Length: 433
Image (cartoon, rainbow, N blue to C red; front, side):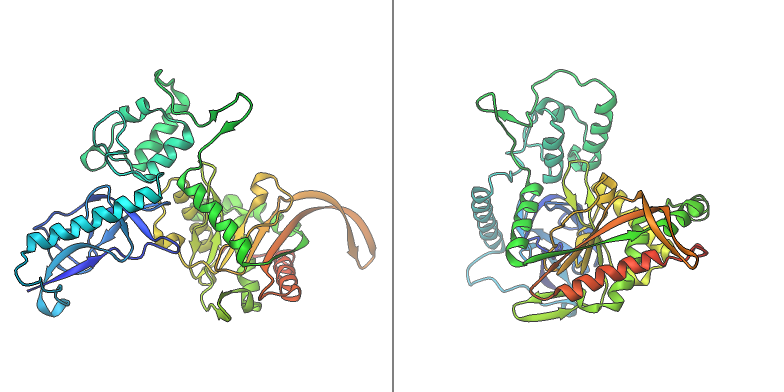
């Protein structure tokens, strides 16, 4: 038998640490590789961490509320000798208990340093509200702040998680109930603080801070250039209107414009693979996989970008199911770290907000992003063999922002025009597949 250290696995791009919510297995339990053994929270999602080996869980090295760096040891598993590499031998004269104590002391010191640098992240004792040592995950606390839930309200919510912990589903259910039922009076947790009666101060939540940092960093890294085209969506709009009821009946899914737009983007990426790249120093990395990120607005007002991996492998039905699934789970805070990782190109359907066009900011390390505006009826010139006519057409603006370090105006402009061409040439007799 041998002891192996299990480390905190990578949780997704740009995630460097996570908070331990609870252990799902206890020392002495038999575990199988890939069994979920603990639950953690990142700045965006709660997720379960699988075991790295099959064996006996001998020790847990981190505890509920600890902030753990990716790659740090979290547990020791006793495995058959051939399954892994034994843990480092203890120094002469040092017992296993002393070794664990030193690890715990080191973790406590690291947590103390992390907390001093990040006062908005609190440990389990610090996040207790109305009930001693009650732990609330960063996701729960961000929803609490966004919804203006008072401390008294939060303490009154019955949790369904381990040790009655309030989960994200508990807090979201309370938010929905709160909309229709009066809230008992109590001290409110203010969303804004007034200093002089003229200005209010609102503290950014952790997710908003991260979004702000990434947007500023993207503008610093990439010189943004934008190109625009106006697209005639009439044929596509009419096709969707004729087929949406049958589509729902046949596949149990509502078909929105988003999968149709993503389908056109995927086709254009096949034509222009140099849009599907990233930059590493002075090297250009051409991505073989076409992973389309789609911006989704959350109930809190923040933005998240789940990814459709290998989007070119889906037909329209598959794309529709994937879009609907990711959108739903994003709004319910049920995305996993894998759902957010490895995007190669991003789209944003700003038309859902009634916007005509926009200049979106590139999601690093990608080099381009596309925004689709609202579809509006407009008078337009229609060319026919018999001459030009004036008619009513369904028009939409497409905005394309790209990194001018590696994407010149020729490529950026041709790419957005090719997406437009695919949409305008949509087959009006297309079968639902």
